[in-house]
Amino acid sequence: MKKISFVIPCYRSEHTLPHVIAEIEEKMESLRRYQYDIFLVNDCSPDDTLGTIRRLCGEHDNIRGIDFAKNFGQHSALMAGLRYSDGDYVVCLDDDGQTPANEVDRLLDKLEEGYDAVYARYDHKQHSLFRNLGSKVNERMTRSMLGKPADLYLSSYFAVKRFVVDDMIRYENSYPYIIGLVLRATRNIANVPVNHREREEGSSGYTFKKLFSLWFNGFTAFSVKPLRIATAMGGASAAIGFLYGFYTIVKRLVNPDVPMGFSSLMSALVFFGGMIMLMLGLIGEYIGRVYISLNNSPQYVIRETINMDQ
Image: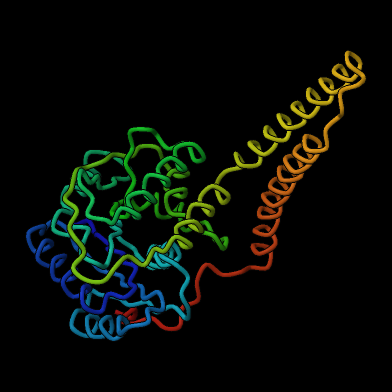
């Protein structure tokens, strides 16, 4: 029998998490060909999510709990669950019930067909306008910076084979980005359509600041294209400056009485100064990440594990 490991990052889900677990159990009852276990990673949630995880672990032998010492983010929580998992297939889903656990067989069937990774595709996402906009920006970023195929839909509900997980957990730097790790391991990826539900309660934990940090992490952790773009922009700015200087000299020679123009000079200085600062900031971001990684800054810190000895 093959084994399925479910990995669920948990944040502000003390009320929704039991419903997700019950749905997984009900579905797996009909999939007798698989064994399964569940890893619940508490990302230092401010509510009683940890208490809910303790209760669920006490009621079920196949549920494991991981408690972070502070909030490290969804992708770090996924990495912790992936490292502890030992299933032949690993399924990652959300804790709010919006990703339907009772449709996990669609992802598993696609893996059985020979694909290495399978992502759920939503025809109608029940997110807010802000989250949908963030998803579109993330899709464009992964396509241009990470080489994601244009027809591949990415979501937080996905399943991967063991060898993909083994490659993903080799990444030990401070800024994990799950999508980049999957694309680094394989391009044999498929989509399956699933329903996307409305949120049962509460609101998304992704603020604009967190979404921006996620996007920035994605294209700086797994791509040097931003540096190449900065180089191209620097070259283009230099070319524009050279042409403008040539134009100024010719204009002066043709008509010596024409004033040189203080405003045009200041505009050029502000433009090129801004471009230089932007490029230096981008380079500094890369250097800072290298510095943090060299100091062995952890992806996460685990305060305790629950039910791991079974």
